[in-house]
Length: 606
Image (tube, rainbow, N blue to C red; front, side):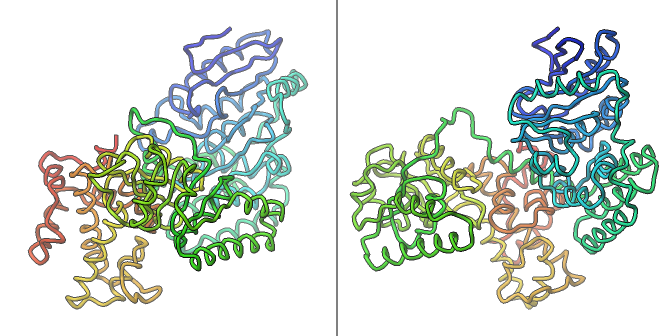
């Protein structure tokens, strides 16, 4: 039987009930899906003709985790831990069929099943530590019972998923297939039908060697000792509890730790960072789709560093510079980097040769004629690039030059600003076309970078960091020491704002006051960008600082900090500081507006 409007379909394949999860786009385990799974499970259990169950998902993936938007809210029944317990208690064998990525709550759901089959392309993992929390639906209790403390702790503390092959070797999975996932799961279900289910909570393979288990816990505790975030130490505690406590008591211990961590400011900041990153990837309504350009130009040998990642991504690259020595020097840099990759075993010589064959050096701009996008290393190259390329070719300025508001082919011109090692800010002018922006973003992502769309001349990160740097310079001029400022800003990852900052400077009693002035200046600039319509949402400001400027992820960003301070208090602080430097701290109109109506920056992230 099927119900196309329901997030779970119950299909009968002989004596096997197949529960098909179908909650696009990623089958997140929100309350609606949990209720539907529980109802389907009840129906399958009550059917005397059903002897086993298969749990699989439609779409791109098995559930990728819990619904993070529910964290911190009153629990909606059934809670995920209760659902997992209910699956594990099923008197009929339940087989999880995994494709895509089973992460966090998705993996906990699979661990509650009695057997697990996966496609070879699947991955499984517990990324909760990156959100400042831990697996809270039995993961810290079931996984160690299967694979032991050492590997369970590694997966939970680094948060990185493992391949299906590794999961099979560890004992997380029981079978891996290249294709035919549902057929393999059905075969396993039929083989296990009529047998008592083997529950993860009853497994002992991972805890039999008590000495090795204790040693792994002790080593992990030493590793996380003194860390800035509370989650790693609580993960170690919970994995230790899996050996020391009965399962139900271990679960209660885990849940208490989860509830504690969800309420920490670090977890709130990390979850904000997660949503900021996701929001930055969401294109505005009506944005055209664009594939990654297959042939790009780089005009200006001094900015040829992007040539190698483009070649590695399979693109054809035209490298142009009218200065022959500079062009030769750039080619030598690329060749040296390729040889290093070959020597270190990162690529084969044949791959190097294929990359080199796709690189076309030239002295004249005419060679750019067939390029879909041209990266310009100097603003002075723009006129030549316009003359050499057809209308519709995207012309992306890498240098910090403002995108003109008048002139020819303005729809094609934008900024393409690398910020740190992870981020490209795509800076649109007033007339830049949606296609040009989409093409530049596709290129950035194809090069393995994050991409952020904005209209702020110079980019978001540069402008906000400049305000922070100015605040530091002012306080240094007023007699504050570099050590005191560096110590105050270190916890935010902003010690680079302090010239000649000593390493590992400890915070002083004045740290909160000093950091507040710097963060206030940065948040104020972010508010100005928002008020001027140059940035889509406050979380984009935070994302720019987190991904491109080294702002500590567990602090959330300057706009997150401003919300925690509160707009009324922040306005009061800024007005007081503005008496000394009005150009730096005079409150942006948006801050006054939020304070007047009791709003927050986060209200504008929706």
